View (cartoon, rainbow, N blue to C red):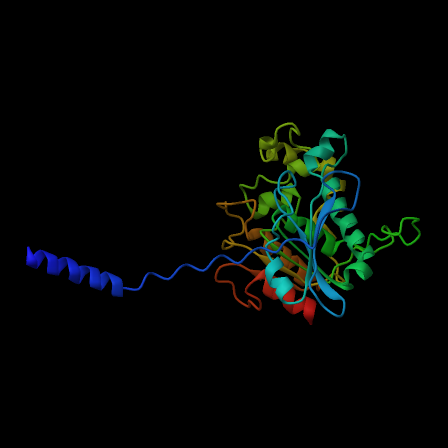
Length: 315
């Protein structure tokens, strides 16, 4: 009995001396927008959030476009925002009208709505430069997947400003200082995509090859898209980032999660680094700066999107 009591008291003493495990630090809170749901158009999806970096002088700006294949997604919690805000770079994250909504409204090609909304939102933000303490020149776009494609569209497109417009927003520039993107679709041409990645399936919905009442049909009509390519070629030339590259375009940064293998089927053909390899080749031939990052890539100057944006927007 005494032995049992001594054993109990010894165990209790050791337990009391054992420090409790350290509590895990709480996750860093996400920044709330300085101003939320600012309308840049009349549609319910034409809204944006603004995150202000405190500064005595105008700040550079990250212009973030969410992904989701132009049929899903939302502007909340833009991924590079925390790093950019900490570096003194303000942030705007936009919503835009989905492509299937354009299709239901009879707009062709449906990709017109998300891409033209991105341009209009950028012009709207520039019109707010004085009020929001933004440097109009140093604006870099970012996003993933479809948001990445939209960012590259802006980066490579000629300026869409209309200096003679009665609308002051339309008179603003759509040109960027840079773009840094994740998993970008760099082309919307099914012929190119089939050559680069034989099991490609994405892109037809941008030109109406989808049932707008069923988002699950988005990637099911690639064969028809390829077969009828000539009927939409004028739109491919107008909206595919690959087609728009010119020597005067800003530097772009492309990041992917797989290793390229041109001409071979890919596990994720919609976000394969094959897209990046072919765009980088095209940019290098034209004389446009294009950094490509994927696992074990060589000549990597910036390991992350945030690192590239901060280095480029602040230099």
